[in-house]
Image (cartoon, rainbow, N blue to C red; front, side):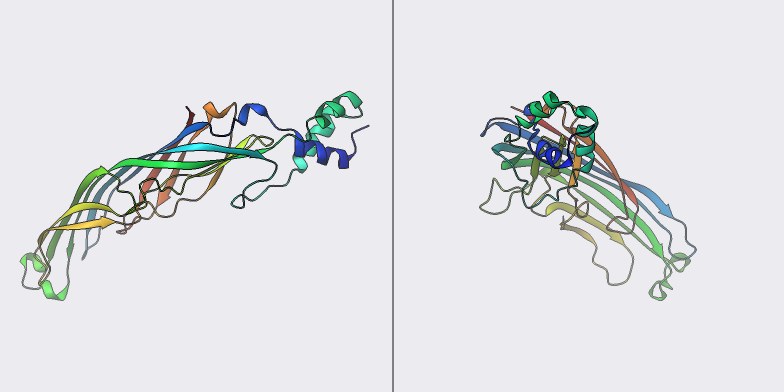
Amino acid sequence: MKAPIGLILVLVAGSAHADLLVPTGSKGTLSVQYEYLAIGQKADKYDPREWQVSRKLSLETQMAADRQTHIASAQKKLAPTMNDMVKIADRCGDNEGCIIAVASRQDAPRYQLWRPLSQRGKYSVHEMYRGQTADPACMDRPNQRCNRQETRKGGGEIPPPPGKTNASTALFEVDSVKKDVFLTLPVPLMPLGYTREVASDFPDEARGTSQGVLTNPFGKVQPITVAIPGDLRSASGTRTIKLDGQEGESGTLTVKWQFSLR
């Protein structure tokens, strides 16, 4: 005979894992490295193109643990806990001692949200775009083609928003029952500058050196939920994402993150 499902609902709500919850005010660091690479070419009779793109960012967000709670933050969507109920039912059956042991923890908190305290990071941009065009305006050029090459280079400290040196949109929330973490990785909050060099024989196009900015170097970074195999010291992950690119090139974004207690 298995434990009543109504009782199991109570047990699931209270069976927190203490190894994932820490005292309020504990400090931690959420680190992330982004690397976007795109190398390729487009063979075209009239408008051939080639590109080499490398963008790298590393960010560290210092965080502090809020108090442990029984409910998740508004940002997190709660998944159904039916699987948890079935596991407990299979484990305890009609064993009253097992049921009581779990029930004794029904008032234990389940969630803990970590809030960002500060953020800092570095970036580098190395890009080259080269192409030809058979535009009618290029009829008097050699082979009736215009040639164009643009390079972009920049790097250094990632600037904070004006007057908000500690700003961050990072989110890190532990679910000690499901043993996972819901997180939004830190991203740059300000445009990233670079030096732009254009060599072109296209009529009326500005040539030479100018300044430019990347306002969204990797597109929108979505929140993720990741299982934690042990305690918070083992919270890390790697993601590989295919992107179309801002200039039409296709490339790969590799995201590596890690959370460490201090």
